[in-house]
Image (cartoon, rainbow, N blue to C red; front, side, top):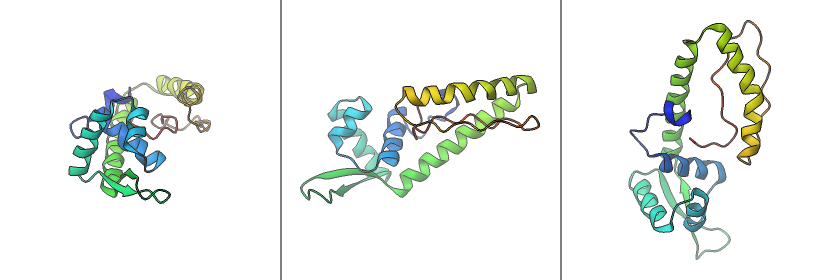
Length: 150
């Protein structure tokens, strides 16, 4: 669903996922980043070089081992992710607003059950959903706290 409501013109799914991982987990070695994203190291090297040219990531030294270079998200990378999330959330809210009230309530109820399960499945910690008030329009469903655009 996230892929369907996200604008893909600016970044590939892998690029967005990589930026989100860097935002969530902090600077990391390129080899570990490639493994975490499930891509070959040469492919990750090319992706990181492209993201560097776009000023979305930067290379930083490791405070523990000065010989090591880490990949980190830049402020511009954080803003690109935030803009993608805002756009995706607006599109999802638009789609949900078109649903009848009963369907919106049913979807909100389902999300309270499924979000923690998905969070556990992905290894993250899903925040418990707060109960919706009867007079409240359900907010767009939030992903478990993965921080990615998956």
